[in-house]
Length: 77
Image (cartoon, rainbow, N blue to C red; front, side):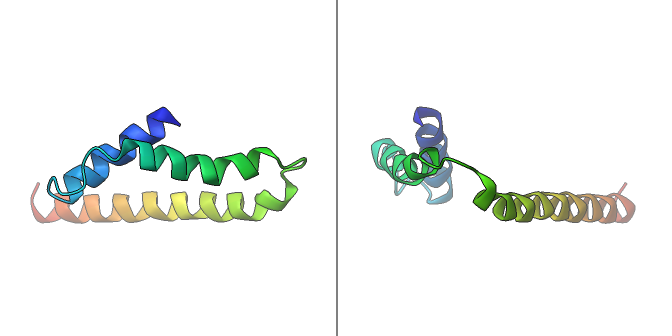
């Protein structure tokens, strides 16, 4: 969770042009609030649909990235 908090802090700090920096503790608390109830689940069967959606989203994102990369390479090799 420290890694998640640090990475979120860096990304949000860069995207907000240094306006929201050094809020690492808040991001760690938010990630703990999300992850602790998930760790209490006895079976992860209910998460299978969310996982399936996430896998399709990743494949879709990779396809979009490949299409845009090919388009930019064809336009300007």
